Image (cartoon, rainbow, N blue to C red):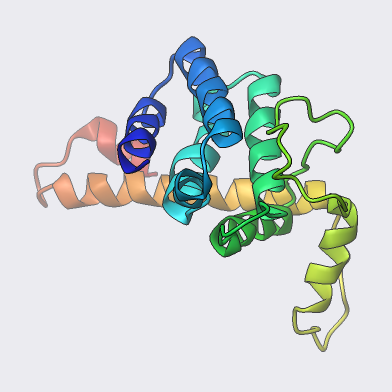
Length: 191
């Protein structure tokens, strides 16, 4: 199982070929359906779910909507648990983190890309009902409260990610520049 998961990680890492990603996701779906708890427990780890699958949702990969929905369906289904001896705490953490960021998961009836095995629990709470429960665990602010929609929260996180990326670029430019011998193009970019 470790070698199989390692091969899947390699196929999903830094791969911009949509056809390869689609085939890898289909293979992952089949493996989840047909492999046992040892394989499943490796797939639901944070280093696979967050570092490989969630990373593919980044806009720079420009994945088609159906592939994005398939990834989200995997995470949602896995977070709800497998029957048997699989610890899903790490994928559940990733799922709740995505909900907190305002990511909308496909509804259960339209999720055609998820695992179709008996590993899905019989009761499925809707993602919208999980969001208020998560909010109630947060400390309440003492001042006036703003209620943001999941879309607004997602947009804020997206803007924060863009700002972080800009800071990284500017930091790397500043680190490379030697005082007195700056590249004029770099200086214009910094302004």
